[in-house]
Image 1 (cartoon, rainbow, N blue to C red):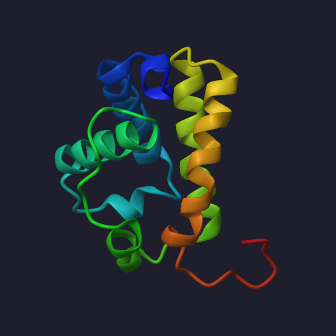
Image 2: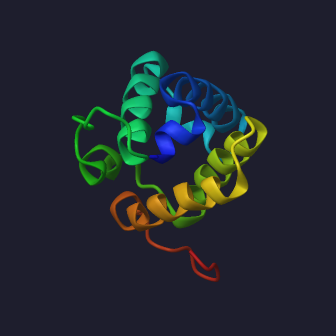
Amino acid sequence: MSIFDQIGGSAAVTAAVDDFYRRVIADPELTPYFDGVDMKRLKGHQRSFIAAAIGGPEPYLGRALGESHAPLNIGSAHFDRVVAHLGETLIDLGVDAAVVDAIAEKLAPLKNEIVTAAPVAGSDG
């Protein structure tokens, strides 16, 4: 059974994306990335991406991650904050910790595509 099916399919992905963006937008370090963004459209892309990444029935047909995130100049610490918000969202929605860990493992390699900001001197990312 895919992770998509284990967490409850499309309804669970929709709930997760809605709660995830509520958290991300409330994070003062991440809010600036979303200024002027059509959140309804972004949530649709995110639902498609997450569903496909965790074994959903439809392929992700959006732009490549590197292409879509490059103009944002995302730093390593901000990527990590986003992943942490996703993990917290899934735990709060009742997803088993082992499944959350499996999802995190699928997302970790994406960091190289998404992070484009040079590390800040004296930081670890």
